[in-house]
Amino acid sequence: ILAGIGLSIAQFGRIGRNYAAVHDSKIVIREIGRGEVIGACPRLRTDWGLQAYFSRYGQVSLDTGLEEDYSYYLGMDGCIPDTAIFRKTDLDSEKYFLFEKK
Image: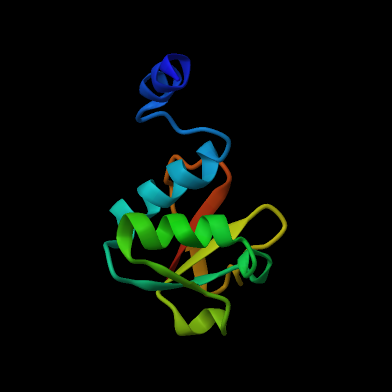
């Protein structure tokens, strides 16, 4: 029991296996603000962990509807919005990219 308690205390505040999703959700939320709905790559539709981080840390919803309906769009390698409509922001992200409508 003491070993379990010690391990729990040692891990407090550390991000484990999904560092990129937590890191990127927090920096995106700082950029766009809380309570927003942003467009997202359709491949992120079933990434429940990522959606949970956005909801937990900033009440931000990811929607995979028509990309032109949103001021911001969350993409990733191989899944980006139309660059005639969006420009990539210069956030220091790990895995996901934030795009802003031009």
